[in-house]
Image (cartoon, rainbow, N blue to C red):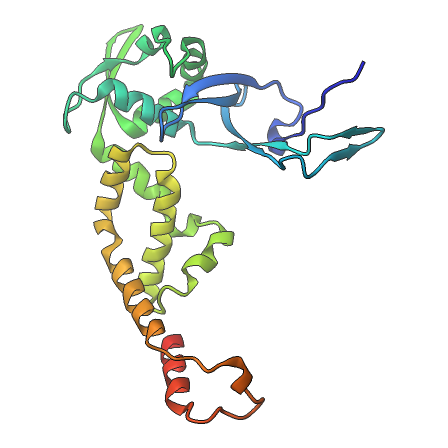
Length: 263
């Protein structure tokens, strides 16, 4: 009897641990999404599948799998999921917010949410405490009832910290390296890249609010537009006109323009 094998890559800390599959709405789209919880350590993982479309296989010790796909599980800050859930519950029209019983989410099962999965998330006490402190105003109604409502100032403060330029992955730094030579604008460009990454886990409402916090990154956009115009104004020599150590005929002004772009 053959055994179907699946390749799953997990963080070292979760290797060998029991992970519980959860079905929760994605904080950006609201679409039901599979997450995996390391309940003991209160870590939430999201899964992404790398599909090789039948062009790769896996070869192991005494086995071969024709399915060359793999599932990658990476940690996600559970506060993004909390923000999505609490926004839906607490929004009272426009920019108004109301207090809600957080535990009432345990009773919600619908097309996008599974009550059992939400219960597992809510039972991660350290995560819950961090989420309510970072995102909400909280009132204790009784010893066993707590209500909360979104505090926009807290949410935006938390999101701004998420956009710290120093958090930009090294692999993305090259994408902003040529935006400007101005160090302040370069920092702002990195901040915009972080905001774009963060927005993949935010609803349109919070994405709009977050970008407004940074003035829509208008300075960076203006700098990029100027750079594009300068590059488009340069007429580069054809490669066949190049001779090592010798400038091509009439290239003096063109070389100066190239140097200007680099400066």
